[in-house]
Length: 152
Image 1 (tube, one colour):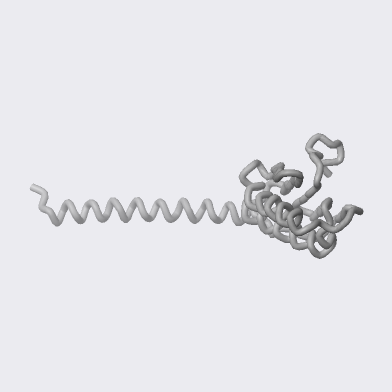
Image 2 (cartoon, helix red, strand yellow; image 1 turned 60 degrees about the vertical axis):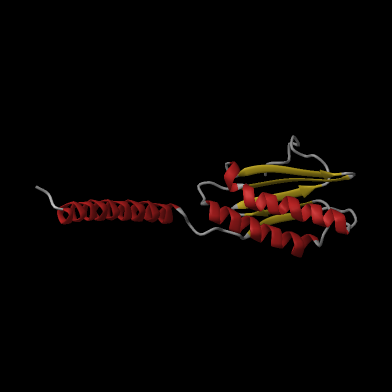
């Protein structure tokens, strides 16, 4: 007859066995991801800044909202994401993509750098493109989704 001690001991051993296998599998998967995941290359290929006036405060807020959405969601949308925000007469359209294979974290990091360079290089103009080696971001005040120049 099995005692409570035997049942508890067997359950603990089963759990420890499961935990050991789980840790080994996770370690292998993380090791594989690390091997595939090279560091992100954020060297600039080019940037294009619009020739128009600097964006007004409301335009800047909308551009910031669209760029934040691109940064947060591009990796979730197969590393290629379009976004638009229309607020009354203010419209901003955005597109971002990341090279694959790339981790979601690297994609987000690359787009963060592109966004910082947008401020540095284009100084709040309404239209811009920033191409880094591993990612791309474009913001415009017109819908460019079907332009032939959208995908560099």
